[in-house]
Length: 456
Ligand SMILES: [Zn+2]
Image (cartoon, rainbow, N blue to C red; front, side, top):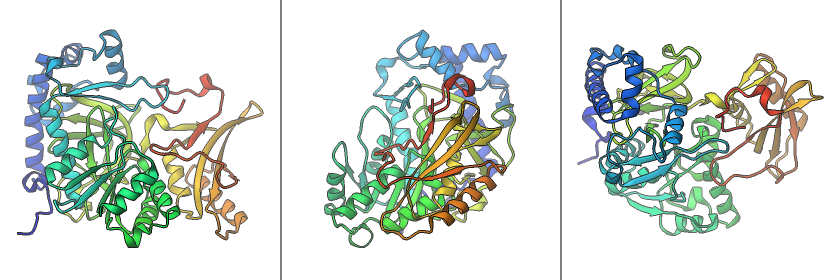
């Protein structure tokens, strides 16, 4: 019998009415559980005058106060190690993970019970199966298996699917490339940056991944560029494989959205397990379909640490499910995660998101590496410079490229002037995993919009 296209054929194709009824049911149960078992939530619900019994329709969701990362950090600091969020005795946990703790941010400590952990693997199954992973696949994880949750859940999902899992672990890029070629790997899981690094390494070793390896799927996670068309195009060409994006967050469950095999240019939301709201980050008011806003996530699978209306700071644009032809009824984030609210930079009165810059820079395929460099000229004026390295051995009319890119960047940013600077090949930093291509060299205190920002 041929496989179904869906991991969970019933839930992934529920009508919107059925889906919302299911969400309301789960929301009531989650809030009642959190209110009776987690002091953190009880305290906050009481302060907001909210009682779980008030949830009569899905719109009543808005009575529940937003939850922020800052509140979680405060709770953790006041009552180490886990704050008063836990709803279950910590001795019953089976997993401990730390958020990635990008420089300047206090990592959050997360515990999962067996039930939570099994659910996390199940969520990855929606995504991996949806992108075409099957029991016959050989899946390689270019992942270090440390305290950061990363692809841990995806590893277990592949076991659940029945695929053969090859844990890359900590080894050299060369060692990884050798394993991918030798073991007949069909699916590689990696950050977009590292997928390109693996390919470059293979080139140096004389291994033609596009034509001589069995890899036909590259599954991306960890960076917003997994949904940037030019990045995907380059990776698909390099690997001779389809590239699919996924995104998650340690706090909420490690995957919440995924690209299906129809590649709709966005990622489906797993709506039978999450409520994903999009709000205006300034006012907290709901943003309509098609409008950029912040994701606010309620997760039904985490019992140990209940997450309700969590402000993710991810910026997204939601569009209706029927924009994709796969038949799933979960809505879509067009273009995946568009960047992070706290990554936004204010340059001479204009908002700049690093991902929006990358979207334009990556369209120029002669560019190998780049950096967004923000600085202050003569102590007076903020400047933004894009430093670029070209791929070696390619003929380019530099002046024309410089002009074109400056015009495109200005066009996307209310006419803001971008400086374009060419640097010699090999001068910009390369990244093994999560790339950090933005450098803000301005004096700190004056522009700081958020002390928790990872870029400061
Ligand atoms: Zn789809």
